[in-house]
Length: 520
Image 1 (spheres, rainbow, N blue to C red):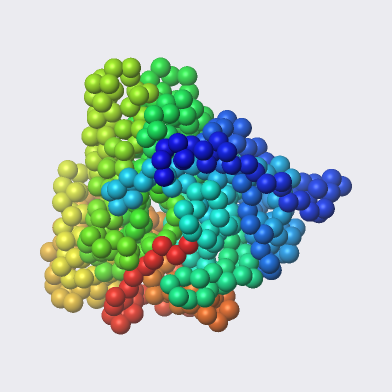
Image 2 (cartoon, rainbow, N blue to C red; image 1 turned 45 degrees about the horizontal axis):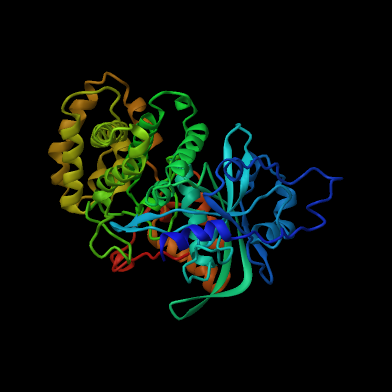
């Protein structure tokens, strides 16, 4: 598709009339939503107004009441048929301005000049109870002008996966988009020869603006739109940068810092995103799009789970490298804003981009110190961390349990930790070094253990547990395994009676050939 044709999608597309329901426009009761839609009002030309498709039999499957309350929503009114109508797209609430955002992106290193919301719509923005602005968007709500031949729909399994993993990441303290609702549509979705139940996810995000959003307009030479978008992002996510002479350069630096912190958090829990394209990296610094994602059991830096990542581009160990690469693509999109002289702009951008590895290392090492229970800093701490990881890799030790059991070891019970090694003596020399290092902190062992248990989860979304829960929901209509798993994952740092199975890694048979897919 030529650039002119791409532009015409935004310029020519017209929104369909909003579908309203009497219950939504009845002003005798308080409005369900108080929308304040800054993107729709400030970023004209960066999206296409559009309406979700109607579905035949929407039914609420999972409503996130806790999240609804933090958003200031009436959970009692929304958790039922009315919410099913709203969150399926059958009814548009008063004040919503549905739109499909335009964006491009580097996918596995190759640039796609037009991607955009092919199966998602931003309904509007809410101000939550903390005064923070949040997007409310539908995913799986039908075709848009950016669908590129897709059906715009989503199967239930991947929608439930996004709900589950997003909530788990939030409970782990990792910035993430979250799910407000899962609604089945009563209509089938066809994927790879299979007929699956269709569903719509309602996603909450600080925003859905991506590096690829900037790339879309930068690639077309639309500097006005790039500047418009940058100003919107600064006002929304980096207000301290507004009205500064070098604000665009500071935006690049601040966004780089947020991504460095985010990737360090991923690495700290063994999370593998699986598809770190530039259209999946947000300007807010949140994790977005839980398609071929998974969590590592045995520590192996080369771990890949994604079915579409044959070369291992997005493997566990490469995530900081790819984030660095993506930041460079963001810098390229901003170049005309950084300085009127092209050479000077490149110099300024390169300085920021080259600082990313140091930013990441700082965040990662600070986190790893906490995971080891270290309360002070010493110059040899990096070597201590790296040597621990090396022995994990050499013995195929479970990443999560190894760190969790360190808290017991610091209290004098080394048996659970040593049991993870096929050759328990392989950890002996390192333990001696670590114990000597711990002693130099002059902090009570109980304080070390408490610090560790605050950052080393007992429970992560173990891949085999996730798959069993999703299979039960999709194939048998049984949500009980999903609900049990979710309840455990919402309290990842607490030892929970009766939850031992959720802490254990997959058996070799369960782990063999495990693969994840894009899904939605």
